[in-house]
Length: 90
Length: 486
Image (cartoon, rainbow over all chains, first blue to last red; front, side, top):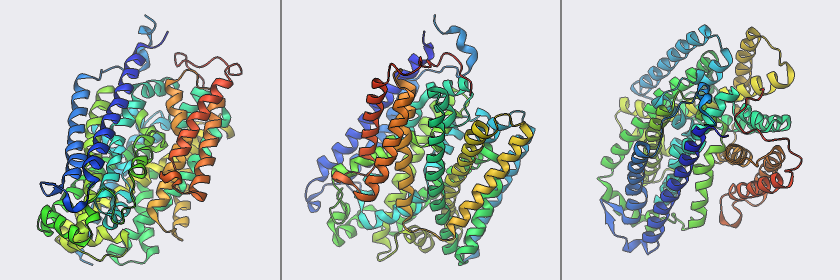
């Protein structure tokens, strides 16, 4: 039987993969969705080109907030020590 | 050179020395020398873990090479640099609690201990040790050169003199203090890196008359500087995206990072480290590269990329602040070098000497060996750095890619796929390494992607196919519930 802590770890690893996919989608989508026109026609937000603002600034802040939320609600505290082995296989 | 610049830098070095001596006192009292010297006794909390990960990862290329390239390329290079954000959370989430739990079960002190416990293969141990030694030695030399160049340009000393100062500064505290000194100084160094980045970014924006004014100036010079495609429109989306493997998710395969994922105290610390680390890496990578781009509008015409960051700092900041900001790249370089040094030393002592040469070595002997090996490796790096190789950033990336090709799947599949066996692991390592070196040398950036992309994909394929094909050969797999002998 598998250590039940591994089940938690597997779930959290999958969350990690999902987060990185979301991160990549935001980063790529805004950068090349808004940035693929003539640079002379760019819209600007707070002085930055819109593609850069959304992809690198807002996107990064969003990821940090998302990670804080995931840590709070999606991740479980477990003991890392070996003493816990007795509860495996239940 | 202003003394006001040098004094904060010197002060910084003095504090780091003290931390080294303090850690040495701790290590001397300990009764489990190996684990304390090479892993800090698995005692790191969240802040320390985040800082040592960030500081180990952020290197000369983040503070010196990277901003230089951004200066030439424009906002497209900041976009590329942001592919590093996952290094802050992805590594700890993927390796996660499972890696920490199993490392404790195996009593693993190095990444190789984990691989040995998982695959039960001496060939893997030897191959891994060679890969770590070769690539991290190259990487360390590049960082060392970067550190010496920085001191050279700040103090006006000769390159040799600067190298000597840097070598003494780093070697002393790493040799005497081990991993604990490395992690503690990393906390200070990581903090200095973040503060330095913020100060310089704010100063550059003020000097340039605000973001809008800077952007207008860049557009006037070359509109492509504010596009995601780079100054000469050569950065294709595929090329930039492929960096997500090299400097983002592939970071899991870097032994100096992975070993930190087995060194923390509890899961609460790991959760905190993910948040702090992501904020830290985001701030530094975004800030330093943006500084490089803005610098082009503030001080045009800097020819040598590596001089962009120091020149900007010295020109626009008052001397004392400049000293504090210039401590940031020093900190980045030192904190990378110290991690590599202790890792290479642990590889030689724990993975090679204790595995193959003298498994029966007594505690006192291990202690002596550890100090001697760390010193010898450190001095060897200094000798190599005397004839410095060019192109800092690329040398550093070469080591990154090689290690990732070799280790990424061995670690990840070893952790999560029961079917992974030693034949698959060895085949994947060899194919990953050979194809990376081949592609890097003969077809750099093949198919418009970074050289690491194909080796990483091919080594995954080879790993899975060989593991499946040799199912019947493999001994019953270790299911992590029993304790192997290491």
